[in-house]
Image: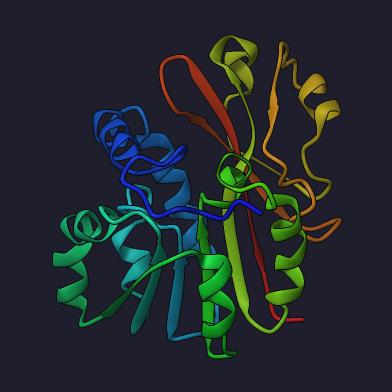
Length: 232
């Protein structure tokens, strides 16, 4: 097993990602708006929110975070905490919310934190496990069972490709129950080579899910999958 390593220059995060996210704030504006709408529609019965891999919170809206009394953030990136506070600290302090930060690997930390009175949000982290750790398939496969007793939600990379692989006409959010696969991409007119981020079995079968288009850079396009699950 190759677990996450705490580093300022990780394969999917760290200072390079913060720099890219800051430079691309205008490019990512549509995604932030779509995520805010989706998150505000989520109404978990919990006063505590656990953020898994929030980074600096580039895609997280103040209005959603301020709903909770306590937030516990788990992230390996040493630079995430101060940057998160710069982005959200003033708004969170004004709401009276308490923020606890845990610097560590969520695979090791999260099981010991879970309780029925909290909700868990995976912040675009699960689709990146494949470039961070060799046991990502086992981790993804175990998550739904581990989370059965809590409200949880995730937005994560489902597929990515060069911008030219997806027609402009289909770059809009949509909802479905069946999940996105290669046949879905073909039916939408998407062509070329797509990277499967391994998250196709994360949400239950025949489960409501929303797909959000994300122009990550001027050359790279992602489909994000977003879904919410209540305690079983």
